[in-house]
Image 1 (cartoon, each protein chain N blue to C red):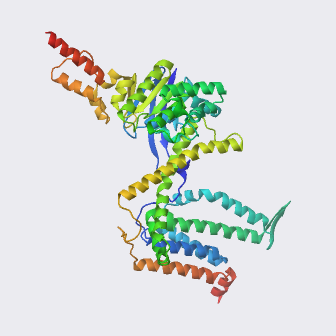
Image 2 (tube, rainbow over the protein chains, first blue to last red; image 1 turned 180 degrees about the vertical axis):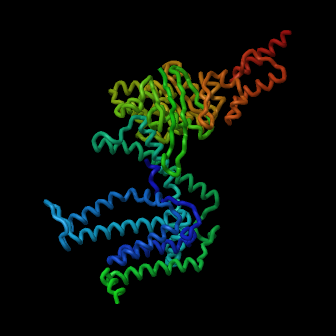
Image 3 (spheres, rainbow over the protein chains, first blue to last red; image 1 turned 90 degrees about the horizontal axis):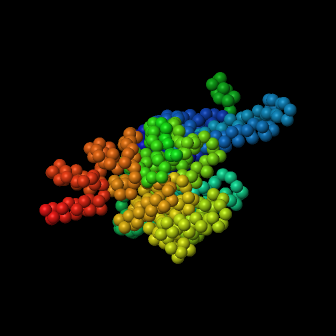
Length: 278
Length: 286
């Protein structure tokens, strides 16, 4: 049930993707998202798809894991594809029966949307969640936002809040499961009855959960004070992040993908055919 | 009538990288009208057994019978089984949520659909059994002490008046006095009501003191079921399972190896004290 959610599921490893600097990875993910949304031509989509495939293959993540991670979006995929195919009314009419008519553009849009969503999920999960531990990820975010601290933004505190939040997701999930079982054993029914009754059943989970979250917060704060925590000022890091030449190379490569996607957007299949024809 | 496991296997997270077999072909029977102790190392599947008994978990294979019926056969009767087999989870005080302790104890009976008079009777009965006074009943569950909250949570299950009461580590995290207090009260409750009580614990001392029968779970689900005498007769086998006999029994075996003879096997400090004093008196008389 709750255990099945692969939220921020990190798979330790030492693939080329795993070893990229976290700051670069975040930039890469952003760039790939930009590229995904910018793509409109077929060639661009092929470039996009191939780069996602390359990232996936290099990461050493099993196809099974990736597919399992996509399960939650299957519905969205089917939903959008359905609407694109049946409700687009432009392009050539390909098929007509009763009230159903399918136009060429509808099919094209659907395929593009499909690739877009798949690529989006694949790149972000392969670059970030599957290959970067949450702690390193927040370090990366802190590193990227550091310049903002010059204008008084408490970057360190943000990063700390984020890493604590990430750290407590599994704890709170586990607690939710426990409390749910305990209330079920007292006869709570979460699935039948009026809306009001069901909302009230949920109260039996939320109140204890909130109480335990507050308790965790106080305990953690005490523990941090006991260990001498007093904010980000003058604080050093155990693991300093170092940028390598290879990291820069990855960034440049990703920028190239984005540029390529933008440049090839205007190109269709016929243009390519013409290019090779000459 | 009893709770009976027939060849029960339970696997956590089946078909995931985190697959883990908690129970493998376990068969056992828990008698009615006794206090049964369930003991085993961490990870031996004690809590899993508890949740299989009341139907929160469904066995991966095998069958769980309560009073002769397969509890997973009819989905609609699942709720009934929650009320027949009351389960007090580990650290149950974290499940309290109502505005007063009284309302929280009444939560289970209310879910059973009982009328107000019956609920009121059950709440006051349950509160009496665990030793909560009228003053704490009207307080918020977040305003009373940890030990009191534990009692309130246990009362919440007792108020459902289940035929079988399972408690997962009811005394964990309490001081020795609170520990003895809760376990003594449970024993008294069992004797008065005739409910079947199953206590899950790590402590052989507690088991020896309060339980009629003991189930020992080993690492691979291998278990031994018997009276105290049967279980503690073989300390070596227990040690191989990563458990041990009570300290006082250990002492008894040691003394016997040095030639001292006791009248009966010793499992509790009180019994040992009594017997040793008697023996000393006998020596004085000579």
